[in-house]
Length: 115
Length: 111
Image (cartoon, rainbow over all chains, first blue to last red):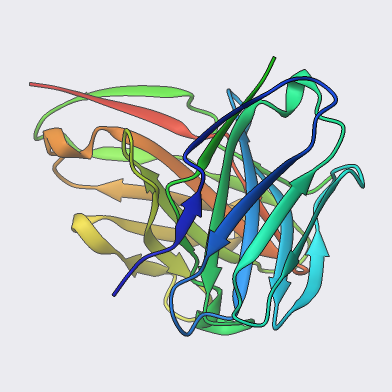
């Protein structure tokens, strides 16, 4: 069974640019989660999508946005990049909401560097 | 404020020694609790989880964790550490449809 996949693996952008990160969940999973893992800060919850709807978002500005497609894959968009957006962006998927379905499976991440 | 605290940034243990990684959380209700491991160059892998019931949960790779409501803790333990356990360990909490991770504990295993 294929795991969660993310693309691209690495990305270098300059301040003010926009970036789109992509995530494909495990087959059969309907929930997708996005996290930011900045150096020394652990994982910060960004967004949660389930069945195409945004279910919740963490404490991030509106320039962080995303969407989930009918095939449950997801995009994370970051506008007006700032230096502090440099981080590893992790995507996770789960079967759905509630109970054991909260077990999240993580992808390898996209390393974003903003210069 | 809601938070997950892993007070030990870095721990070094000898191979074969026992291990305990601490995790404390601050939430009103009993949340769902998790431990993840992140090995170099690899994604996060779920070690174990607690939703309800028996407060001592068993996970993969010989790990276990105990939920103590009175102490708001969910400490991870392993009786005998292997060199391959060297990694970053994260405690996580789900509460109110929000997910919170601790800042992680880096484990070094010396021969």
